[in-house]
Structure formats: C-alpha cells, structure tokens
Length: 118
Image 1 (cartoon, rainbow, N blue to C red):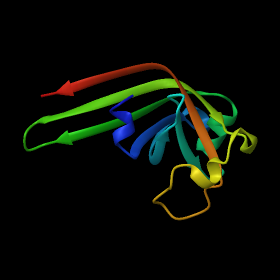
Image 2 (image 1 turned 135 degrees about the horizontal axis):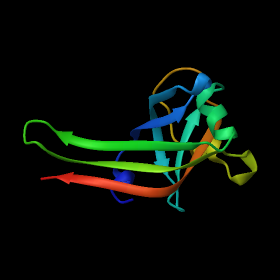
Image 3 (image 1 turned 180 degrees about the vertical axis):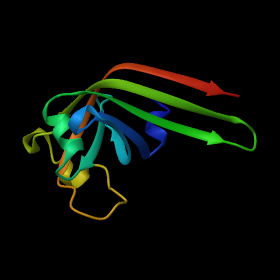
Image 4 (image 1 turned 90 degrees about the horizontal axis):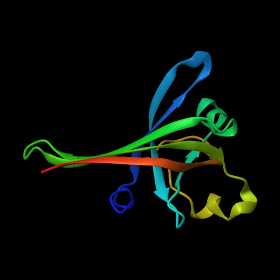
C-alpha cells in the first residue's frame, strides 16, 4: 500500500461489453481504508463497477536504464461510490483526461501482489 500511495496513474482492468477485457490508464488515489478510488464518466468502466465486477488494478515505477523498479497488481471488486459516502467529487482524484468524470469507482482489494526489481 505504501508504494501505491506514491503514484497517481495506474491501469484499471475490467471486462467490458461482449466479455472483452479492457485496460485503461486512470488517475487514482488510495483512501484511508486502503481502497483505490478513481473517477469515471458514464460507460463501460462505470458499468463494471455498478455490477460489482471482479477487476484488477496495476501500478508500476520502472527505470529502464538501471533495470530497477517495482510493480503492484491489486485484484478485487469494483463498486460505484454513492455521493453520500463523502465529498469525493471535490476531494477525489483529479483526472488528466478532458471530459465529464462525475462518477467515482472504488476498488476494494482482495489480493495485492508485487514485484521489486533491484
């Protein structure tokens, strides 16, 4: 969790329509409960969260020149955040991509695995 808190961009992995996996870069934060929170507009990312799908989330920090770094993979269930759970729309992660992102997705980790390259 310490390493996850040091980054702001990760990859959200979910199953979209027609049972096709999708991987998208997202801005995120780790909340005080150790859950990953990201913003989303309407669409398949949010739909996966609304159906509480099994998802994965990956973050890494790699230095190709020195061949060092780390990679963390989190698996768990996604859930759409209800606005009454807190003022996340103001304090939540700030997306780099343009466009409306008025929804929040929370990933509740079930398994966290990592690899350190040194």
